[in-house]
Length: 218
Image 1: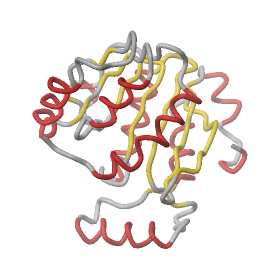
Image 2 (image 1 turned 180 degrees about the vertical axis):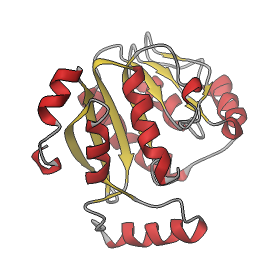
Image 3 (image 1 turned 90 degrees about the vertical axis):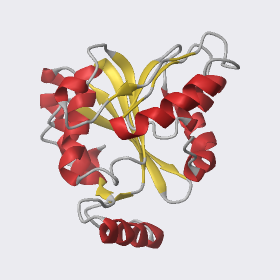
Image 4 (image 1 turned 30 degrees about the vertical axis):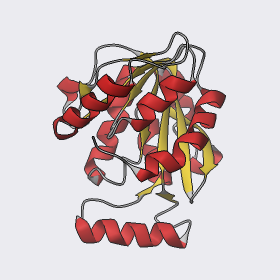
């Protein structure tokens, strides 16, 4: 099975964030579940959690293996960890038909191509219930300026591997999110110079009322 040291390091602070923000018995779609460590851990800790992992086809085998071995026993009361779905954010037909109360994605925006980030936002908006939350965890720049030296170095490393990758600009993501009816509601500082950007899906009229406001208003 795949193993992510980063997942082990950040699972506890992300768990606390989910406790603070998710409704009881939340139905959550995770985009880019990777090794599945987050999916298993959160379902072990949060009673009633309904977690739907997903990832691209090349990650599905390892993801499904972990969920089959670790995700069916020892879960919190009422929690359920579903079999993973194939989901490439650029393929609209792969987004689920079901509606969710939250969409969660960790350490994905800097790995996917920059052109795929708006597709992630559009897909999340399409599957979220009105009032549902999108939570994006990872390193982010502000106005294309690094917020920490480690993030600048990480960005340079990613771009050396693939020019389409790189640490994304939180202000640009906020602007793109608004165009899909996702209103920024919080920007939560996390350990190791990471952040969680939190958006709420609102109806079209409400989104229009805030679309003209500068990103710094949130």
